[in-house]
Image 1 (cartoon, rainbow, N blue to C red):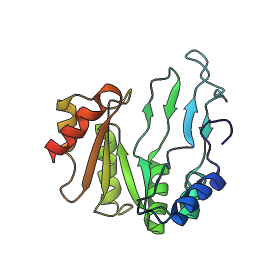
Image 2: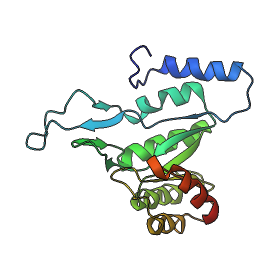
Image 3: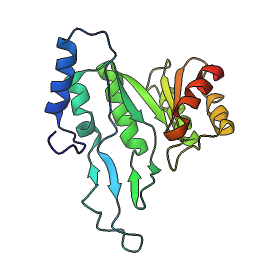
Length: 190
């Protein structure tokens, strides 16, 4: 959009996906479903009311509307709540939200790209498969080095890799200066 700020405008998502499809390029469309889970507390001493600047909270159906209308091949499912680097910012994805959103993805035939920012996220993703909310041939992205998720050290990375079920496909990344190192680490880890 004109402002350059993130937006959950379904029309913008639809415009971009239509342009890509009309261009007849062979790419996999992957849309985010992470927007709409941003909660910024007022301050450490007065958390409520929430800070309107930066807070963008939507329900599961609202957060999935662009996916329903655009039907990409895959879309992200940030598989847990976590503190981010900002002092009072929390990325919010409750178990109820994740079950609802994951169920919608499955019903739409859109493959979730499970984003695991920490070991607990991977644990909950396994639970979603066990509950048959998600299909057993899951796809997980191990997201390393995002404050305050899993640090991008090799011990933590391998602990996460070793906890990915053998029937799943996985990939991994790190942010910042370790981006390319994690390309190599992911290849070496399998």
